[in-house]
Length: 245
Image (tube, rainbow, N blue to C red; front, top):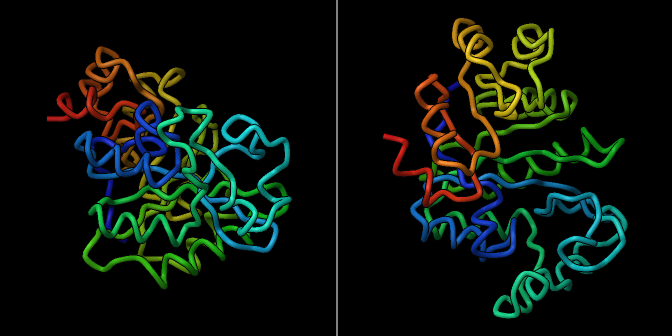
């Protein structure tokens, strides 16, 4: 399995320039100079993989319902842009297939986070991987599949063994060596705030690469790169890219 981890990944696109996890946000990330983006995949009520982060739609669309309660057609009809800025009025919630099509045009690699609703860990991973297998452009590097869900990563290991996997955690758990080995992960994706240099050294000694989220302060990013972090996931790629060497 090829280990792929770029020095900078744009978090949900460029969410300070456009509504997060939308086609506009991915285009804005490319404009900012990013070569890779990160986004979240969930399932609609009718089993279609869509790109959205929150369990519900209140923050972005002003709709209190959960993503899992609406069909893909109902989700695509929502306006995610107006609450961000009237200039983005009508910007919709995209399906995974739509996003992959946009990445092909933009030439962007991707960290695809499987973000299942409770009880849909395996179904979400299977549906997302089916779309990626069918639609992923061969000219792009293979997608990096990450998740907090071990069950979702188990599906990725079984159904996309050659694609790199990242184990997502907030703090480094005591069993991280066992879990990453069992799931065949090449990287750990961690919250940067609780991470220590000693932990990072141990991760590297184990042969794993590291991605840290969500780093928006250039001074913090410079310190993390000096420590030896491989990848920084950021909302402001235009500020972090000049530090990536």
